Length: 175
Image (cartoon, rainbow, N blue to C red; front, side, top):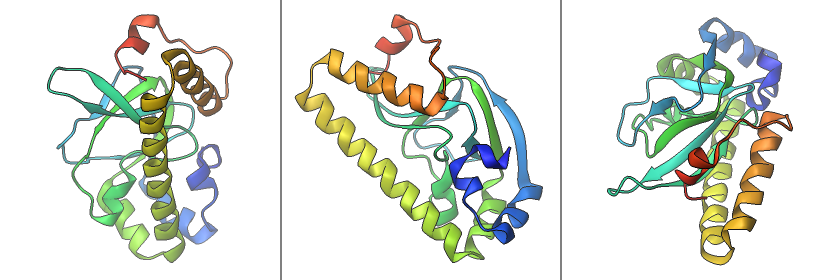
C-alpha cells in the first residue's frame, strides 16, 4: 500500500522502513470528518484511494474548500512540523483507503530525515498554492467552470471515472 501514495512511495528505503511499523491501513467513509478547525491532530492520513477536502467553515455553517488531497499527498502532515492544531476542517469527499500514522511517530521519523522534512514542506506549499488557486477561481470564474475544475481534480485523485457525488453534497462545499 505504500506505493499507492505519492509521498510514501517517493521516500528513500530508510525512511520507509522507519515509518512502516507505524502505518496502519484503514478505510475512510465518505462524509467522515477527520478533524475540525482547532482540533488537535490525532492522526496523519496518507490517502491511497480516498479523497479528502480541506475546508473553511463560516459561522453560518457554509463551507468553502481550500484544497483537496488524495493519493498525491497527506492530511495532518503539518503535525510533523509542530503544527499540532488543525487549521481547517478535513472531510472525506470520496470514501476509500488510506494509511494512517500517529503524529508523534511521524514527527520522530521526520526529524531523522532531511528528505522527509523537504517533502513535508513541499506538500504544505502545494496546499497553499491550491488554496490560492481556489480563491482566484471563486473570485473570477462562474460556478460551472469551478465545478468542472473540481470534478477533474477529484477524478485525477480518485483515478476513476465514476464519482459518487450528489448535487446536494457538492452544494455544501461552495466550490
